[in-house]
Image (tube, rainbow over all chains, first blue to last red; front, side):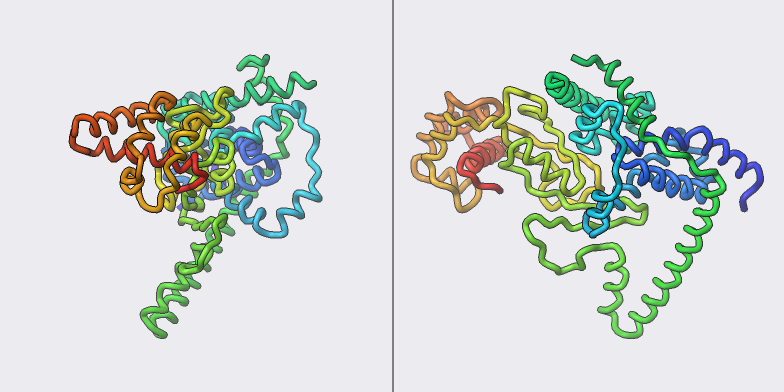
Length: 162
Length: 243
């Protein structure tokens, strides 16, 4: 049974974290529209299991992970179907403020991009990032190290041509 | 040269730029209701499917359920570049680890990304090492065919397979069997002695272990098996073979 206070608590949680999760997923998945849908899907699942999710130490991390899995599945289906080509050809993305960074992020694997986004954009500590992604803190550190090296070298090369 | 703080700032601007209006929370509640209804319908359909299958035959029981989660269906042969994808109840795709041994770092990265996995060099030259563009993957963990959740990481060892090393190693013809068969090839131990000075770690250490065995008659243990594999993998990479 859902009580009024549960609904209120979830609404607070949504207001506090949904935008951050949506932005983080937009960068990780590289598709803002999909990220919004993934966030909604994950938040709806969180509400359905709210009695459990609210006890998590990093419930927002759980939502991010569920959204990432869901968004990833969608991307794979799109890439296999005609819809993938349809989306690529018809949705014209606005030019990002830093095209070199956008391109460098896309060159990272998704696993590395996720670590960069959670650690640098959301400013979560290494342990919290690891808990959200289901990986040890040491793996977070090594992925972050590799990703930053790659970002730096890609950006350096891109900036040299500007 | 950008600083980490500069990258962080640019990332914030990038994320804010990628933002879209946040739907009201009521839409989440409505979506959750639809999920519950869909799940109920799916369970009903599954129960009906199982009941029908039980009546038809015990063998038919399995397929309606499995087809729900696995593509392509069990038993379908895949091409070399295909990846089998399954989906678990939590919504996470599962994929099978491809064989990336013998590939360059760039090729391995691309092959793993194609099936939505990530790669992590755990020893040897790393992704960003500008001095090792010719480094190749010589071993991977978990092995080929293991099922992982999409986004998980495959660790691998990389090594430098230099022209100098390959010039010597390819004096042994491509192998037809396992690493032990290669070691029984004519001239194997002589080639090993010639190749040792141009080999780099960890291959150099493996060669030392093998040569010690050859000279002192020390027994071949697990370490020697790993060393034989290491030589064979480098030999494969030089011969353009993938295992």
